[in-house]
Image (cartoon, rainbow, N blue to C red):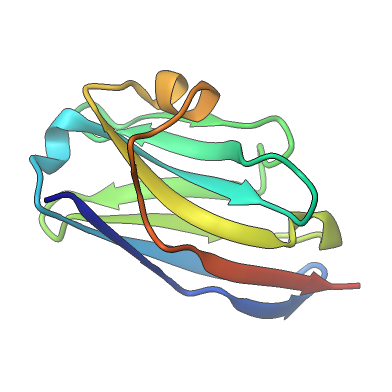
Length: 125
């Protein structure tokens, strides 16, 4: 059974940083695309950063390029999202998602079939 557990959310001031973690279990980690989606109140869920674990290729939404960095630790089955220069518009529930044999681009621009429970990120102005 695929399990994804997020952690690391919280409250931060604009311009600050946070690192989110996603602990993955129950599947062949390096055969998946794994990424971070977010959903703000009243808005659709959007893919912000995804990684093809097998080759480390990454995809970022335009809104976070240059500020967010996704990485994976294959030995620990962990995926991280380093978020710098946070803005109030980054406030959302952040979800970890995974899909078998999806590339970073495919996952972030479509959808994943496995999801974590989400972690709240709030950026104050």
